[in-house]
Image 1 (cartoon, rainbow, N blue to C red):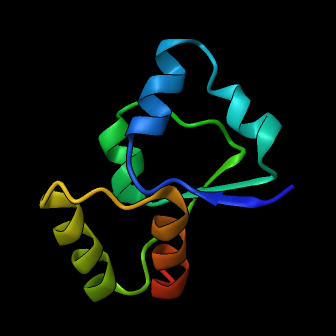
Image 2 (spheres, one colour):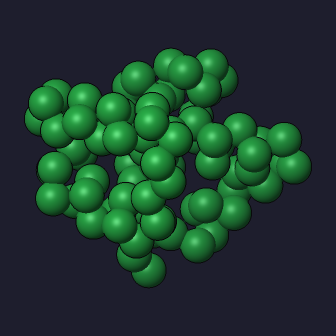
Amino acid sequence: MSKVVISDTSCFIILSKINELELLHKVYENILTTPEIAAEYGETLPEWIEIVPVQDKYKQQLLQKIKSTNFRLSTDLEQYALKEAKEL
């Protein structure tokens, strides 16, 4: 199994609405998100989701600016950018 980084709340919200949040745990061994995303989600996350603070705020802000322009990154490209930014 691989590691996945949740970079916004939409994944949590959508899976919760259909009562399938557990699906993340079945598919991925490690799931990471930030305290900001956890707070935005607004519900208690399961213990198998690790909440880790962002280490590089500049790169996080850069990624947020790209997203705010409605420019859609492919999932692979977004995951690569997050990995390179070492956000988590």
